[in-house]
Image 1 (tube, rainbow, N blue to C red):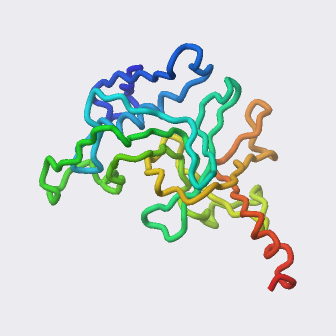
Image 2 (spheres, helix red, strand yellow; image 1 turned 90 degrees about the horizontal axis):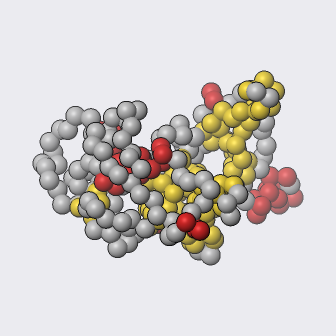
Length: 236
């Protein structure tokens, strides 16, 4: 797959990406989207080792569809059992926030045995036009990394909540980044599973008789916290 796309100006060079599932019998009906592959390839192979590091060229990067952390299995599969996509949600430690951020795991790559270029190739104090946005990218290391669609903050801003967002004592609201704004973060930053449901506007947010979302979700709290929500006076 040629990942060059005019909608992504940072893919000025053309990179051929071949996704090998290990044979025709193992190749799913639906694959990862081109947009995800563009983002992943751009982050791993394009850029400078001075800012976040990059993968040495002409290498195969192993991918995973499942990973286990603390006995919990997380999946990122475009066509699980050749049926439907399965992308799990989890909490991640996130720079700039005291509380973990909820994110959906879209791809998993294993850089444990991949050669990385992290040697500085420029003066780190030199201002580089156009690279401010990626200065906060975590430096690539030899471990498992995940490509995630993350919430903008641990909890939604009050101005983003309307009458179509029902309130409950057992969930909180989040607002996701745009679907093309994905981030690659180390698996070691994963805190634990999250239980998330997209918000659909069933009243007047319909297109062709289908309800549509608004990039907000509600995150259901752990069942262990439910007694405090329903019977606070008895528990306390």
